[in-house]
Image (tube, rainbow, N blue to C red; front, side, top):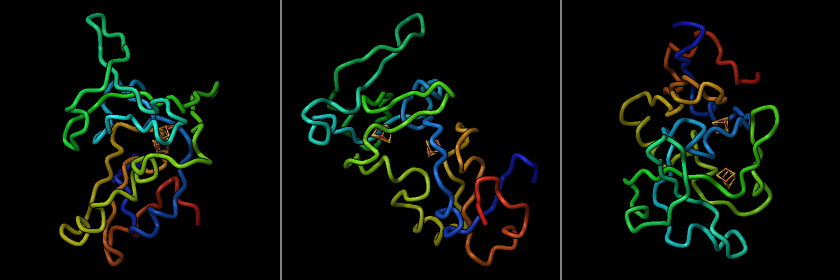
Length: 165
Ligand code: SF4
Ligand code: SF4
């Protein structure tokens, strides 16, 4: 293991870590299109946003610039990766970002990433380890972490940076 990880953590420890608000999972442009939305409903969560679309699909133009596009039927599929921006996202001068909906109901997905995703417990039970999908998020509190079973001896290695004792 290097100082860059991987860091092996129990599920409880992983869930004790707090999001640092880097904002990189709130807008596909911040990971050059790597991070996308899945299962985007046709109303784009307008029901949570005073009737206005919350999540806006994006597409790339020939020169590489991003532009808004209309929602399509395929965006509703869990398997279809939809590049997006969020109208509630508030970029900050220090490079991080605030959620303008932090005190309101948000899409479930917003609170799930990366340690409350629905499949985590099942995959941990089945495989004994689950690398978190944070590889493209070097600023994320959970960067380079692998969730393992409580009795996994690799947990005794260096503590991950985001884990507060
Ligand atoms: S609602 Fe908040 S947490 Fe969800 S994508 Fe928008 S800014 Fe991020
Ligand atoms: S990438 Fe990680 S630390 Fe950054 S906002 Fe998302 S969950 Fe929080």
